[in-house]
Image (cartoon, rainbow, N blue to C red; front, side, top):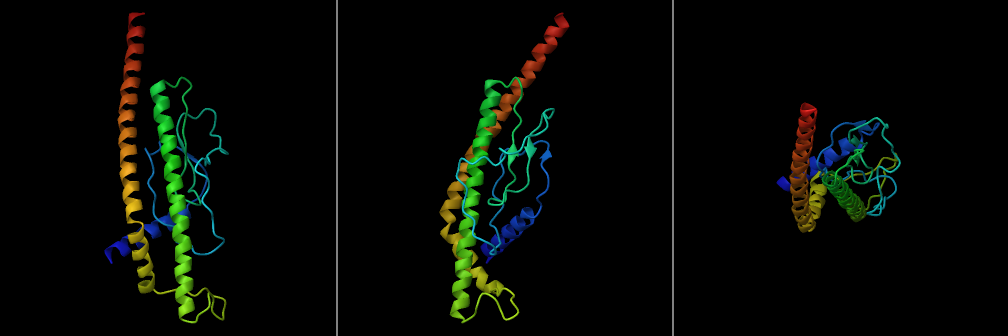
Amino acid sequence: VARCACAESRMATAARIRGLGGRWKGGGAAVASRGCGFSTSAEGPEKKAPPPTENRTSDFCPPSHSCHDWIGPPDPYSNLRPINFYIPKHESPLERRLRELRQETQAWNQQFWANQNILFRKEKEEFVHSRLKAKGLELRDEQGHKVTLNAEEMAEFYKAFLSKNFKKHMYYNRDWYKRNFTITFIMGQVAFERAWRRLGLKKIKTES
């Protein structure tokens, strides 16, 4: 029951995030965003997961004077906000390594949750249809309203889905922590490199 409640909470959060939309916003970006749960929408045409190499931010160009990462509206498949990473004019090899690792981690993260949400939506629809069919009910009532199952019936599906995907989520969490540990470590190296660079410039100015 606790796991079902957790699932419903995560799915409600995902539904709220899905509705935010809006314009692209500039500012500091998180190291890497985790999946915010499953999509709760069972209506509309079924969406297929995009290819892993698809770039979510390729059609957006931040202002030329910007020197920050830009965070976009939630992706319709993964519910995660894609990040357009700022590339410094004189990017060092270490800074480039950090940026490319963050970009690769974002693509990996987006793809995982896009696939997971689409799978969830598909299996949820199949579960609802099978239960309604067993009851002799149609998908919509006489007034045209969509027929739904009660919370107890849906809890069976949530529990089964979480149990079936337990190992997949366990491996995802393991890899996610590994990636973020590496990113955090390199961020520390980049911060040290920048501080050392600024210190060197100060010494040059002082001597001159």
